[in-house]
Image (cartoon, rainbow, N blue to C red; front, side, top):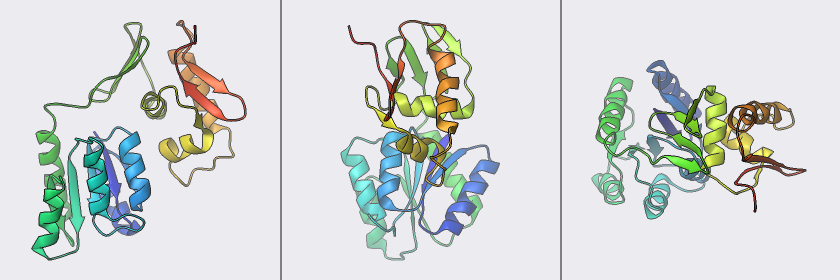
Amino acid sequence: MRVLVVEDERKVASFIRRGLEAEHYEVDTAHDGVSGLRQALVNGYDLVILDVMLPGRDGLDVLRELRARGYSEPVLLLTARAAVADKVAGLDLGADDYLTKPFEFSELLARVRALLRRGAGSGPPTLSLADLTLDPATRTVMRAGQPLELSPREYALLEFFMRNPRRVLSRTLIAQHVWGVDFDTFTNVIDVYVNYLRRKIDTPFTPKLLHTVRGVGYVLKEPEH
């Protein structure tokens, strides 16, 4: 299960991340509302933990935008505000639950488990391009009916491509979404992993789907006829 933690207090975000990773969740973090909104919309998360007090765009504004764009996964609000009106506003905007700071991690974990159980029935939709499919619910990838074994990083890279089909993605954008904002974009690691991925999803198959756009980045698309 993938969880996004949008929290500007880095110590709190790190505390939540370490705790959830110890429970075998995959966790990404964002530290402001703008990047949190972008990551939630682009990447496939099963749950978003969203602080209300955020720089850039506050949590309620991010939540409003997510629901307006059809984002249906569970959202757990974190708030230091004691006012009932703020909690009601969050629930009215589409939050699934809220937790008031400070909190015990055991309570946060219980809320996370409950929300993930509640949302497990529908599951995220399968992504597909030509005969390549990726199922975020089971994290399985298939090409021409054959299952493909990907490393966690290769899977994250492919998922980002498949959520942005036919869109040219720069190395900087890939670094931000797959490796995190602090990743050194001047290394060749992105190119290396794209080549790893290409060998698995393209080399044994036709047509080729993952293309290099010289001087810009990469694009996942069907060949033009």
